Image (cartoon, rainbow over all chains, first blue to last red):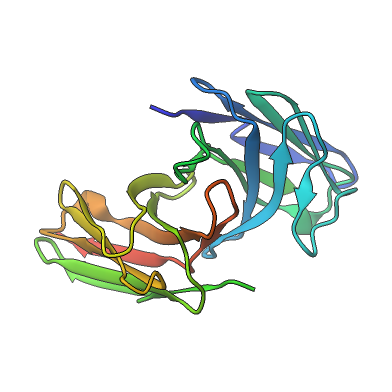
Length: 116
Length: 111
């Protein structure tokens, strides 16, 4: 099957520091990966589309300088939350598809960020 | 922008009962996906629908892609305690395009 893995699964950091979250496609190559954010008891909100070898496409209202996305290879995308603040605390989830033309999207396990 | 309206927001049922939830949209979608999310985990794909009118089953789960391409429903038959979780519908306009999520249906099953 299509497996997407994230690391770390949870992280606690001090306000003002930067945190990097990795998203890997383990058994397929992904030219496109998607990053979502989810607050407690809410739905998933798309933050940005990560494109291998090119700049990410950010959704309206998402600060690209705050949430840095790098898609350096066909199996790895990273999300860096820069100068994190308590309001950035959330559940971040990445997703990818092994076959973009079929529409199926598979999700990682998610990364819980807590900023103190 | 595109939005998906999912209902009900929550359901409390007895083990063994059937469950039905649905999503509607003001826009046309060409792909409908149904996911289940357990606490602290990422969503897991349950069923994918690609054609208007398509009816697809996965074990006790059945989902349909509405004829108008603006709605979809998910049925769970003979619910069991492990069905507990949040179910999300999601739609895509184009293959490879953004996936838009519904608000979720939180299912509780009483043994």
